[in-house]
Structure formats: structure tokens, C-alpha cells
Image (tube, rainbow, N blue to C red; front, side):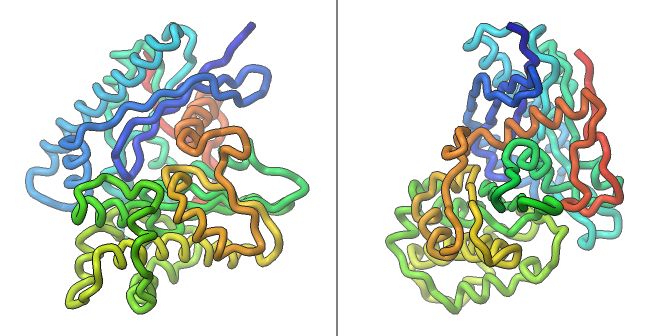
Length: 369
């Protein structure tokens, strides 16, 4: 039986792991064939987060980490191949998102830019597979935000003609794809997803994330603090819009908490409410009618967050993408397999209505094996 394999590789804002999805596009289908996840060591995660903000000796530190991540990404791919018994010759291309270390979208600096590292030359050389990378900068060159890019993939596999749908990816940051039964697909970042909750529990409990949202569930939401959080200028922006750790980070949070005497659990509860409220508000701006809302990314495993979203969206059916047959963890990696497929077939990968680009363009640079 013929196959048309592409491999997607994703390392998100949380920088907790490299997720891989092997996708078969044969016969105009999109079938998830295999998956693999490689946790990133804590020292690598710390280096990534430190590069997210200006500091000394950035170029040398970035150059070394770029190569190091390229090696890690290649190792993760070779592990998947070894486990599945699939030959590199069977994979037409790798789509590597890379690790974002700086994102300055239009409106924040004179010359907007976005920067992802994880050397694709190293990936192609170490795996023997053609690699497509640096997807976001071509959209920026066309006047776009460079993000989010996954809505085009969501549109391709999740849109239905008889129901309005929203697909919400809750990773470090959260973004929404609006898939109306008719009309244009829309998409944009809604604000922080897990990034602030993860940073706060790491600082206070030494844990990398709040399993099931249990710690948040033990606290009480402080409405005054929530309103202060929601006063961030990003929430008043109209789409297209994108954000990152540059805007929402532990330093920003500590500044908001100055001279406040709340318990750490209450602050965690309020941070979860911030994520839920910002997502729900944007969905309500898109529609007040019945719709389906599907959650992917790590946030789909936060039971407290899922419950808060369902409570805030009584007109919607809220579920994870598992209800559509794909585990939430693999959607973004699948999206970059699809983006590599688009690039290698010289098809556009962005949606101008989502990113604000002047036109839809072929994304990424190709590094042939």
C-alpha cells in the first residue's frame, strides 16, 4: 500500500518536550501514523527561557543552542524511525517549527521579526531527510503576524458545513481558530495559555505544571487581580494579533503582584481564570449561537481549566480534540507535517485573514537531504 509520509516536529512556548507526528497524506487523506515525544532537559529549557528576553552574550548563546537543539531534534526523529522501523527514504520531508526565542509582531517594533532556532541543516544532515523550517518569517515578510499558522491546518481537517466550530490550542500561549459553517476562517492569539500557571507553580512548588489544575482548584479567584490582569493592552487589541513570553512572563506577573497579600494558590486560581476568561470572551465575540469548541495542546489535560471554559461558554459544547479522533497533544506537530506537505507541493500555508498578511504565500525554507 502506497504511503506519503511527512513528519512534523513541534517544540512550543513551554519548552517542555519535542513532539513528533508522522502523518500519511496518501489518497488525499490526513492520517496520523506514529507519534513520539522527547522531554527537554531542564537546563535546555532554562536556556531557552533565558533567551526569550534581552541579556548579555545573546549571539554566542543563541548560536550554540541553535546547534544543540538541531541535534536534539534530529535525535528525536531518529528515535521515532528506530521505534517504527520506517526508513528515512520513506519520509518525503520534515516540517520543523523550531523553538521560538523571540517574537516581535507588527506594532511592537519598527521592523517586526520572529526567531525560531533548532538548526535545520543539522536535522537534514543527521537524519538524511529533507527538512522544511523557518515557516513564520515569510508570512511576516508579506506583512503578517507570522502567527498563528495552525488555523490553515485546522481548516483543512476540522471545518464542517453544518456547524460553527472553534479549535483552541492551549500551549504556553493560547490561540483560537474560528471555523464558521460559511464565511472566512479566522484565527488569532487570545493571550497566555499555560505559561503563567507553569511559571507560578514552578516558582512556588517546584513543579513544571499544575496536574489537572488541582492546585488552582484549591484556591479562590481574586476578581480585582483578574481585572488587573485583563487590563493588559494585548486584550484590547483587535485581530490579527499574536503574543508570546515577551509580553506575558514571570517578571510581568511579579510586577502585578507587588504589594498584594494573596495566597499562592489563590494566585494560581486567578491565573487559570485569566486563561479561561480571555479565551471565552473571544469566542463570545465571534458568536453567541450554538457552536462546538475543541481544545488541543497541554491545556486540554487541565480538568479545572476545561470545566471553567465549559461554564463560561454555556452555548457551546466544549471537548478536547480526542472527540474528533486525535489526541490533543499531537495537533500542532501534525500541523507542521501538513505545512511541510504544503511547502513541498508549492501551496500556501498561511491564511491572510488570520495573520494579516497581504497575500497567501508558500512558507518556509527547504533544506534538501
